[in-house]
Image (tube, rainbow, N blue to C red; front, side, top):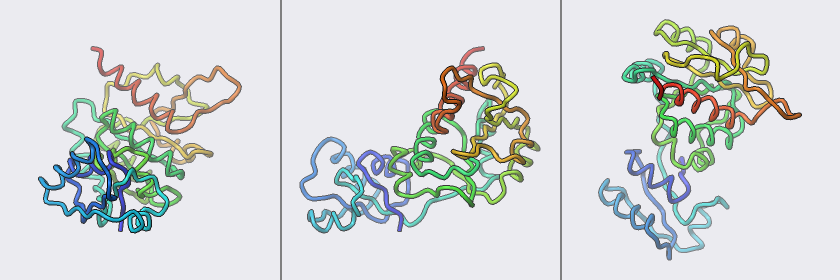
Length: 243
């Protein structure tokens, strides 16, 4: 059983067509978003159950729920081919490859940024990576419900497939040969982000067409991976918005 916690994430899940089994709302909840949840659930024929405070707290398991919990059976994952094919509807397809992101909070923050940037899909690794859990769903502020996510065993095989489909693979690395803003992103792009501590694995880095870096001016030589992802994605958007 997979739970979605929080008013906005639950509303986003309803409106994006996620298959929900039931929505639990604690007695006494009021406000515009609560009303929107009731209306949206009725429209989509999703059952709502109002619970007493004690029963709701048992279900909440000490999570920050804002009085709302939705239950869905499982996370929907897309295939590699499905994401590649759908991305080709974009003038310049943009995909994100996450190489062993282990912190659920980082993963949730990254997915929120990816959705805001309008990327066409995300690949996450099966091993040594955070899964799409209720925590990730909460941190993403509902973005998970709007994204095409694929879970893969071998990221290098995905890179090979992307290259065959005309994608350029761009990795982030402290010793990258180019500053991130010097590269022209007006091309089908797959951006690779590495593990919080170790970065991109060597073989994955070797398979990238370009390795880019963000210049550091302070005494610390790296940024949090979710921050780095945001900087890169919105630089790509900035460039693509100019002819």
